[in-house]
Structure formats: C-alpha cells, structure tokens
Image (cartoon, rainbow, N blue to C red; front, top):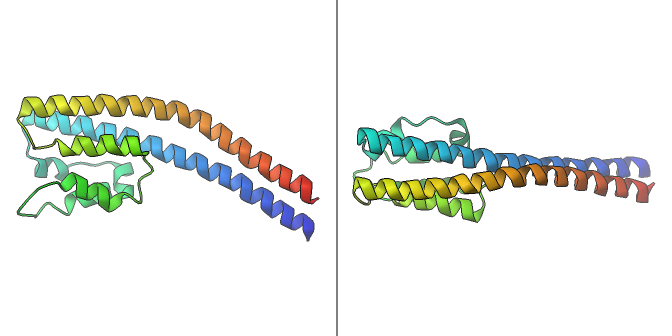
Length: 167
C-alpha cells in the first residue's frame, strides 16, 4: 500500500511537470497566433481599406478559436455602436488565454488602436505593436524550450525523491 501511494505521488509530480510544459507551449502558440492576426489586420487595412467588421468576420485561426477570442469578436458584428470590441473580446476570453501580462498588454494595445486614427498613424502604431509582440514571441520561444526541460526535470526529481523517501 505504501509503495502504491509513493508511485501515485511520483506520477502526480511527473504529470505536473508535463502539464506545466503544455502551458508554455500554449502561451507560445497564442503569441504566434496573435502575430498572424496582427499581420492579417494590417494587410486588410493597409491594402484593402477594409472596415473592422469585415476584417473580423473573415478571420480563421485554430488557436484563437479554441480560446474563444474570434467568437467573442464575431458576437459584436451586429452591434450598432461598434466601439472597443477588441477589449471586450479579450476580457471575455481572458480566463482561457495563457499569455503573460506583458504579452496581454501588447495584444490589448494593438486592438486599442484599430479604427481610432487615420490610416498612416494606425499602421505605424500597429507596426510598433507587431514588433513588440514579435520580440515577446521570440523571448517566449527561448523561455519555453528552457522551461519545459526544467518543469519535466523538477517533476521527475520531486516524484523520484518522494518515491525514495516513502519506500
């Protein structure tokens, strides 16, 4: 019985390490998905002068759909007053997102500039936020590689130590 309990503790510790690694992967995938979204929106505004309702209507991304962001954007499509949709969509799916506070602030800042100024200023502001998120994404990718190894090692080490101490 004691051995079974120790083995369960080992498995719980190991699964914690693996789960923490999945969170890191999800955070990186979300950063990359928002970067793709940023580029798409910039192209729609810069080349086609598309209104935001039409831009948001045609976006497809598995990662952003899974967290509910795209659905939250689409729910405002029929609103008469179309104001601050991006922020309300982010707030609606905030619990599902894995982004850090810095990454979330960049995404929120990008959305805050959409439709609030002339095209040239809007595109410059969007380019700034795109560069900032690209830098955060690169930082996240390097941290993810390191952290996944650390979480797995810690999970295994804690589980093994528990197993050894109990047995």
